[in-house]
Amino acid sequence: MSSMTLNYRMTAFNTIVWKEVRRWLRIWVQTLVPPVITISLYFVIFGNLIGSRIGEMGGYSYMEFIVPGLIMMAVINNSYANVVSSFFSQKYQRSIEELLVSPVPNYVILSGFVIGGVGRGLAIGFIATLVSLFFSGLHMHNLFITIMVVLMSSIVFALGGFINAIFANKFDDITIIPTFVLTPLIYLGGVFYSVQLLPDFWRGVSQLNPIFYMINAFRYGILGVSDVNVWFAFFMLLVFMVVLFAFSLFLLHRGKGLRH
Amino acid sequence: MTSAITIKDLYKTYDNGFQALKGISLDVQEGDFFALLGANGAGKSTTIGVLSTLVRKTSGTVQVFGKNVDANSYETKLNLGVVPQEVNFNHFEKVFDIVVTQGGYYGMPVKLAKERAEKYLRQLGLWDKHDQQARNLSGGMKRRLLIARALVHEPRLLLLDEPTAGVDIELRRSTWDFLQQINRSGTTIVLTTHYLEEAESLCRNIAMIDGGVIVENTSIKSLLRKLQQEHFLLDMREELAKAPSLNGFACELMDPSTLEVILESHQDLNDVFTELKALNIQVKSMRNKSNRLEQLFISLLQKPEQS
Image (cartoon, rainbow over the protein chains, first blue to last red):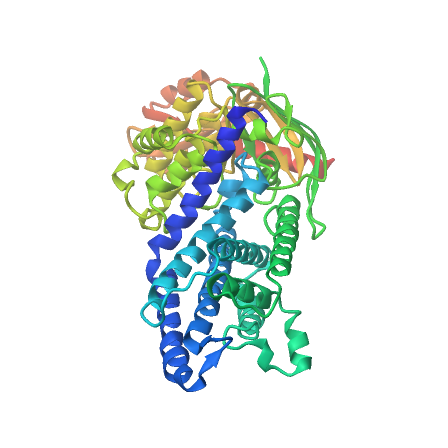
């Protein structure tokens, strides 16, 4: 690869990322405000009002226990939502053809959309962390693990959003997965409880939920407590990243839903 | 002279079984202004789609400036600008951003992309709207924005899929002027159209496509030479009550002041005027009836049915 084409690829990548970031910044009332309101309500209702009656969980107050899970939930939801809605909209109104007729390689297109979605996920995660400071003190057990887990989880779900958008044929199709798959997995992934509270059978079932590993690894980074082995969680995240990236590239290369 | 486009035995069958292209072959020289003419569903847009890689061919070879589109997509796409038939930009983006972003997709630094965007938006009369969302543009302006977007990286080959469909006459003329200017500066242009007047006014060479097959591929001049008859409209200085009897010429009174005269290829226009002068009929002005290519087009399409 010559330096000229490397420069070209970097310019194209930056263009896609900046276009994506500009999009979610332009409609910040739709993209940034609602998740912050939702997470604030969770903090108030579950953390403050109900949490005060629950007592400790995993050695921390209930509020402190749910903060990492709620931040991770916001990151996951928004990374996914950004890519699925942006890519599907561009596919639907065919503005994606701007990119498809240009020389931008498929992996640059995919990376650009993913990083654009990760940007929104991390921005929401950052705002959610700031909001959480009104309700709870800031703990940081391991900064590196915290950042790596949130970044990798965000990438995994941005890729998930991309695949959803590729297969979607109508706007209904981009809400089905978040509603019927993503939300149950997040709620059953240990955001609000420790799996130690569950009967053996359901504790075993929880191990099949990928989000369970992400939330626990993130909680480990912040609080130092986890229901799973953190390195196994990293391994799972890495596997998901590689598999979903490869599958997304395969779909782009095939032109699924994009080229006739 | 090098070929801008070389297409050989191009076939395309869509997933639903519709065979859009049935083995077309085409050669467009660099610097040409080339028309691909055909009715709706003839295969024009599919051909443009294959060139721009939005449509995957079933078989055949497609080269742009001597490079195979499949094997050298990076090089061929860099040389290509595409103006689609349907508006396909994000309507909520600003006009300027749409063009600058496209520059970025072609690896242009932001400063250069902004300069080029301003240049082409000005040339296409859109600079006043550059800070507005694209949805606020009129239909004609949207089509010109598509042209500005396709030109931002200054491609050697510009593909336009019915660029003036639904555009009013004034805008159509100004778009034609602009395209001719771009072509004179060295850009090869291929446009699809079903406006025969457009092809006649702009293009040097033409291919007529029907049912996925090229039925004619020649220069506009030699195509017009094939016309068996031409229709002229004569504006009379004084109104006529009925069509005059002209020896050897068919004519019809369109309205009291306009006479349509049909001239066979072996006949001379001078003889028409001699006849009219003998009848003491004064002609104020004269024009071609604009559908002469249309007659030829229809006759070409009818040929296979007759044979």
